[in-house]
Length: 196
Image 1 (tube, rainbow, N blue to C red):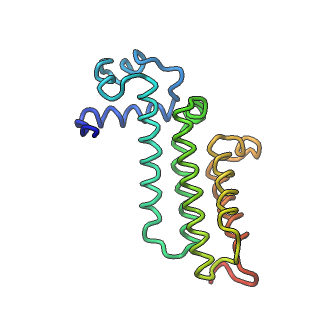
Image 2: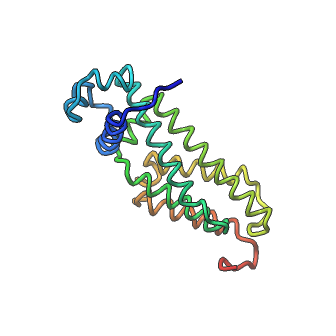
Image 3: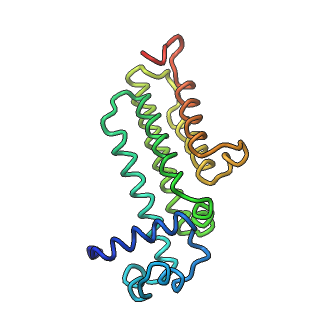
């Protein structure tokens, strides 16, 4: 069982998350981190046993917080089209907080990449549930929900890693908006108005 964080530890994790999101973490040593946060290395060791474990903890915290904020954003939406659009817009907003250096470091370090991949799979599962709900309500045409969700998941992953945005020359937010349009237009029932 994990001990509850002290207020100071929670504040340090918040500042550490902000530092990592801005600069990444691969180039930082524990000495660098302690100096930047104006704390001792023993304070950092109380949070995690090594720099690598600290990175895993902070990356997990970032993705967990992002998922919670996105879920809160869509909680009151009953229109499945709005839910998908808002979910993807929320994902774009959360990713805009992360620098290219952070995303690269997450991708380059296997334990944080595993966290990232779990997050992408969870996003694909949420989209699949939205699609299935839309099909059941006859808002969307009959489709292979798992296939659509997996394709969306691959696109989300390529946006998160910067591959798609770099190739297309667009921001993450623009890419997520386009993904939402692609999904919603592709799922639309024949002859249905998007305003129905």
